[in-house]
Image (cartoon, rainbow, N blue to C red; front, side, top):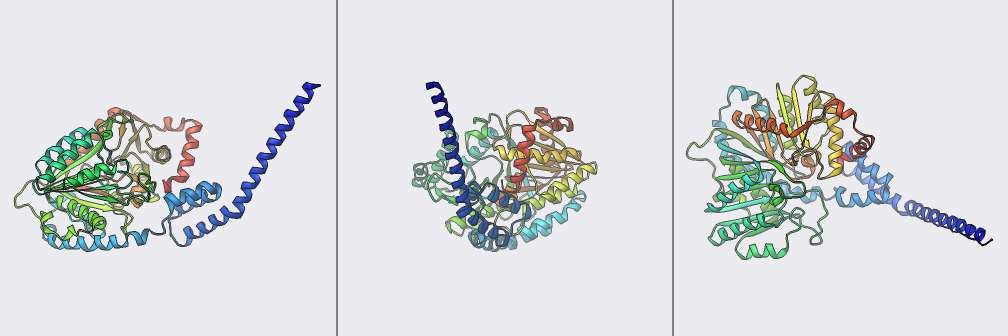
Length: 505
């Protein structure tokens, strides 16, 4: 009898537990009905009628808000809301426009004197596109060194920093304090003590782990520090939109660096992802003044120093011949009216006749880029895309995987880099034109982050980048149609969910 009573007690407790759970669910549903759904409804109206998002992004947010209302609401507050963007960056856009016009006026004679070789005539409209939409000048008389490993880039950078005589301007998205950063900071402090002007601009999210003590130490030696879009609460910057993703260094107005490598030992292969393959450029010549304009605009927006009006920071034209590389420095961001880098990619791909090589850690494409690449593949152009074999951001990785499926079906060749992580942002076309910089092949880089790329009109550099791509293929696995079609059900599920969220990743 005791056993029967015990069993009945168990069943009673079980039913009581079920009742409590159902009551809690009912209360939650009531809460949703009473508070969250009305809030989500208002947010939905704001997104549809006031923010004027593109349809893909619009539907992604509406799905989140109405299918997982609580979580969707929180995510929207931290990474989605766009209400103050126009006000936040409208002054910056005006400053960018006016300051660029100053230097356009000074350098206009250079553009008029440039002569395009016959094979580059077809790229004249692309050159004009960047000039008209971004005030980006086509500069000549440049030399370019390409670095594919962080150690080589930092070795050259340290050497150039030690030779600086007038000024050093650094602008980086990620700066983490470790032995590599300490070495660079020691050089900067010593140069500042020597009387060299040193400025460091870092992103409030990418540099959030460095203590105020480190920055204070730099300032005490004469280094000027600027923080882009700082957090409301120290060390807790969770606003992932509108990040300054640029990586720029300008030394004495003569030497410039731009590319994918941030400042951290991770970028020399000493991080959790192991071997780190990236691409960075060292430019000497007239294009450096355009990198300096970009730095000055970003610095002035934060610090109000008006560097753009100070001629001492710009070497408008070299008095002697140093190289023959033609370069346009193109920037884009949420303060831009046009998606300048993305539009440049579109023009390059549309002009392709033989081959297109793309390296990017993320492949999340808007409809125009996706269809353009598919059309190029279907037309018989050799389209090759290289991405990592391992994710640093899982949702972004699986969203990328869904896009490459469509490209593979159209005939593109897709490779996953197996020897560590590939962070390179490179696009080459026909051995003639290439682009290297900070912009990934994804919607976030095109619309949400501040980016900068060098568009290069030079056979030698482009062929060099193509050979690097082909050498990287030796460390890759090709995702053939057979391999892609045999992917497990769980992978297909991850792709489907991530693809829905792709416009807001």
